[in-house]
Image (cartoon, rainbow, N blue to C red):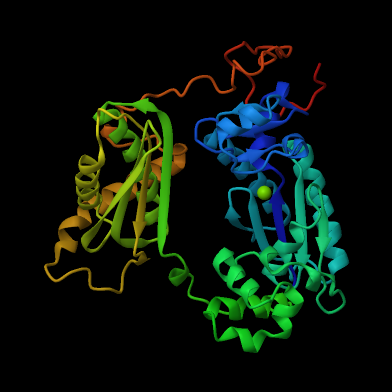
Length: 420
Ligand SMILES: [Mg+2]
């Protein structure tokens, strides 16, 4: 079997540089709308900026870095373009995250060499059309392909042939995708530092862990994935937002409802129900507090979850202290269906609203995210301020406008012509 893994390099930052020509070649960090830097351009990495560094520290330590508000709508548009271009070559590609995808290419390529030349063809096309760079990994298991894609970033094509090449045995165990920091940490304590020693001592270490490590071990040797019940791996989902400090109840609640809608869409899309919810808020002074509530049953009923969320929020929200961050977590997730919902057949009562929300999901999918939203989100301020930090770097918007462009309306696709 042969697998390919494709990963965009510094994706969010590259999209920003693509859309805002004045940012090209400059150190930028996205996430100005939140509290930590989300994505760094390679120029910012070269300066030594670390990912997830708090925004105020980035400003202080790296004054030349331009801070940019995240534009997830455009990242999704670019991500869709990326997938569409790849699908021309590999119809069965599956998306792993906003900037990563992978596929079994055994039907398309017989050898690693063939896979490498297919990769370079796709890489050329992606980079020409999207103006971002992409890294490719090829191997006999999805896990090794993913690992390979990270080995020669940016603009790399890396293959691992576990039958011939054992270089990767020397890599640290924490470089293995999917192992998670908890397991890596435990392995470190057991003095298992490298992939090689993990493989060597495997049957011995296995008893400390779950089925997940079985699959990882199997794939590290180049084997195709073992069957794992994916549903058991995901126990919770979370969404948070940061915003300008507000003391207004409905404004802040509106922010929470945006998280709520996002998670509800995800819950329906992945066909899960949840058993408990957690609301967290951060006050203007950075004080964080949160509370959880158990739902009366495994459910994804909008009104029921909303009701519980409102109870938690009213308990937590204190208008006098101002609030700048809300988070929402759904946990105890399990697949919908095949399970008796509850003893009082409340399930049937909720069926109608479920159909309504599925129709809304369809509309949103057709016209882009969140065209139809709950009325309670309307009280939330619409604008977070201008997209690029105007105080920081006065060069913003000074590029020569293209024909038909104005200062306020700029071309929202890669401009591949010469830039002055
Ligand atoms: Mg990436």
